[in-house]
Length: 152
Image (cartoon, rainbow, N blue to C red):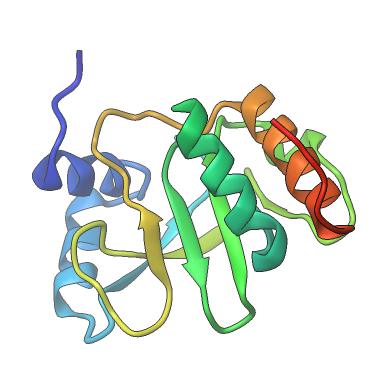
């Protein structure tokens, strides 16, 4: 079992970088606490509009099947860290993926800034969002956008 907590979270995310120590320094020295990391090494990233992502996250939390989740207030999007290879296979309206060959800006897993931030921060365990649960949660969230109906 992998260790969890703030130190483990920093180590887990930084391990995706070509130079993990440089990544840690970048987080610490950046006024916003941001670092550029490659997707497709330890995780992919799936981003959806916030109107879809927030209700999906609530369902994932109820199911206990979520992983790290980001919020970008700049474009009101929610991004889920998912298993490697997912971004190449998932398609959908409003869905953006970052996988192998992509670089993404990620906030420090513990520090909070005014912009890009974690809704669910990594805990260092390596846990990612369960894909079957995410698909279900996104379908339920999309159905809920049409108006109030009874779902899960």
